[in-house]
Every structure is written in C-alpha cells, then in structure tokens.
Image (cartoon, rainbow, N blue to C red; front, side):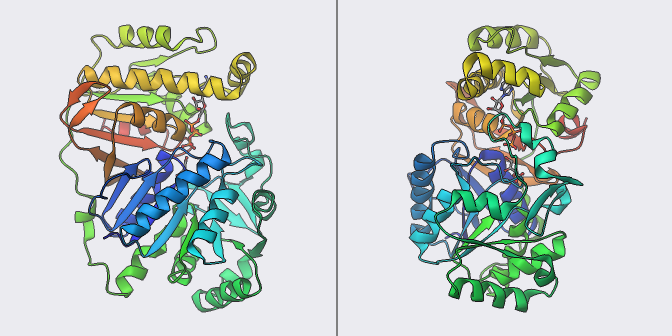
Length: 425
Ligand SMILES: Nc1ncnc2c1ncn2[C@@H]1O[C@H](COP(=O)(O)OP(=O)(O)OP(=O)(O)O)[C@@H](O)[C@H]1O
Ligand SMILES: O=C(O)[C@@H](O)C(=O)CO
C-alpha cells in the first residue's frame, strides 16, 4: 500500500519528485499514465501524466482519475507535482487541477510551493527566482509551450484558480514549523484556498514539509517533498531503508541521448556534447518532416552505437523555435519534434540501445509513451533532480528489449557535462 500518492504533470517532473522521495529513504515507482490495473509495491507511487500543456479539462479529468486510483490503493496523502518554474498558461493547468483535487479530497486548502534551492529556484515575497533572475527574465519567458512572463506566483495562480491565493511570507517561514502550521490552519479557517509559501533554503522546505504532515493535499515542486518521508517515519509507517531504496539492476549496453528541450541548461549540455561525443543536431526548420528526420538520424547513428553515448538533438534557439511555430503553429511544431524523437528512440532500442537519456519533459513523455513503458523503478541520482530509472524487459515500439535504463532529464536540470557524466564517461 503506498504511503504517498503523487500526480505529476510531466514525466521528468515525476522522476524528479521520485528522486527526492528515494533520497529520503522511500521506495518509489513512477507509473506512466493513469493506472488501469493494480499498482506496483512501493512507499510512493508517482503517476506521470503529460498534462502540463493539455487542455485544462483533460488535465483535470486525468488528474482526478489518477487521484482515485491512488486513494483506492490506500495512499495516505496526495501530492500534486508541477514544475519548479511553475510552467503553466493563463488557462492552467496548475490552478484547475489543484482546484479539482482540493474539491475531491474535501480539504479546502493546500499549499503551493515550487521552490528547489539546490537547482536555483527560490520563492521570496511570492516571487519565483531562477538563480539570481526573476522567473520572467530567466529564459522561461521564451519557453516554447509555457512562456512564463510573470514571476509573482500569487498573481499567476490567482489567474488560474476559482479560489483565493494568499502569501505565507519569508518572515513567517523563518519562525519554523509550529508557526507555519498555525498560519496554514488560520488561512484555511478564513476560507483561503491556497498559500504560496516562501522558501529560500532547504531548511525552509523541511519545515514546510513537516508543517503539512496532516494535509490531505500538498502541491508543489519536488523540493517541498523533501520533508515528507520523515513525516511517515515519525508516524512509524516507514522503515529506514537507507540506500537500498535506490537499488536498480546493473547498467550495460549501447547508450544514447535524445534532446528535445530548448531550455538554457540543455542547450549548454548539447554544446558540451558537440566537443566530447558523436552529436547530431537535427534542423527541424529546414526539414519539418518526422520520417525524413528519423531516416537522417538513423543513417547517421549507423556504426556509432556503443558504450559511449551518441547524442541526437532537435533543440534550437528561441528564434528558430519561433520560426517553426510561425510555420506550423505552436502545438504542431512541438508535436512534430516529439514524434520525431519518439520514433528515433524506438528505432534505437530496436538496434540494441538499453541506456537512454531524454532531455525535456514533453519530449520524455513522447519517448516513454512510444517505447510502451508502463512503470519505472527509481534509482540513484545523477545530478540534482535527475535519477536513473529502470523499466523491466518488454516490447518497446515493437522490439523486445532486456530491460531499459532511462534518465528523464528536466530541461533546465543537470551540469554542462550531464550527457556524458550520466554514463560515467
Ligand atoms: N527546434 C524546435 N522547434 C520548435 N519546437 C521545438 C524544437 N525543439 C524542441 N521543440 C519542442 O519544445 C518543447 C520542449 O518542451 P520539453 O518539455 O521537452 O522541454 P523543457 O520544457 O525544456 O523541459 P521540462 O519540461 O523538463 O522543463 C517540446 O514540445 C519540443 O518538441
Ligand atoms: O520541477 C522541475 O523543474 C522539474 O521536475 C520539471 O517539472 C521539469 O519539467
């Protein structure tokens, strides 16, 4: 029976959250899509949806279905995971999904906290920073699907929800768990639906995590989940599993990286790979045709597969992304790239690749779905927020595989040498 039931709005976000929970000593399995059968055994189940950019009604319906499955399996607390950069549009989906979960759980109130200080995301006076930049000056204002043009999260969430949003400021958070707990209870009793909670350090997140021990619903990034394993341990529900929580089968076999994220960190990682690995950069604008791009990539990969990773990227700078979007429309441009990379992934697995890094949440969603993977066990961390995961043997895109190691990297996560470091190169 899972202790914590999680609903993540994209696939890299799901592994990021799972990684935090595993580091806290919980076993975690990421389930792909709304579960239809019995859930795997784990302390935490993370249902990975691709709902960040889908129409709000679909995102709500899928999130509620995931919530039902988690509750039916016995989950004691529900966690709604969204991006540490609060990726969303005016239409949602953070507000609408959170509203639906608050209503389903009858809890009236939930915190909203995307902070992840280790990766430079902090919230101060309700404003989200990425490193030393406000969110809307961090590059996220150019995101291909969810451009973030306002750093004030009280305002951003306020525009997406039918409820009310209040700030729990730094000065309150600094006072620790007891004051935080009372403040949250007071807000709930006064009819506020959400509190954006400031957090600048891990110590703040641990205090917030402890303060929400008895909340039916917690919403946020992976950072605020840091304090949750200790709550279950304090209640005598979670044994001390130590490093065993992150055990995966040994890794071996041909390696590849597929990048569809256009985020600054991923662009830097592609730049590094250019000098240190076989790297192919597809020009989607010049050839906006999935079949042709796949053929180009597979012909290029011929003879290059081995222990050192090959890197195939569709990522492009903002002006080229904008040009493709003008040509095809925003959704169709994204879908073309996702379809291209998913097809390449299936073909590479059919050619024996068993270790795969995918950069970008939407991209990971497309790849994992095409590979027919249904569940990922979470293993050791490569860089903050990105663990190796393992999918049992099965049939991927029509080809049998002996088990796949996958690392789903959030666009903006990972050091510059991530694509090589992941494989120990
Ligand atoms: N050259 C390109 N032109 C237009 N769109 C592109 C191009 N390359 C990638 N894309 C699209 O940009 C989107 C990037 O989103 P994705 O979620 O994969 O990355 P990200 O947002 O940086 O990562 P994360 O969600 O983990 O933060 C995808 O839909 C992808 O298909
Ligand atoms: O929180 C983050 O930044 C990531 O887990 C993510 O959601 C990227 O899509």
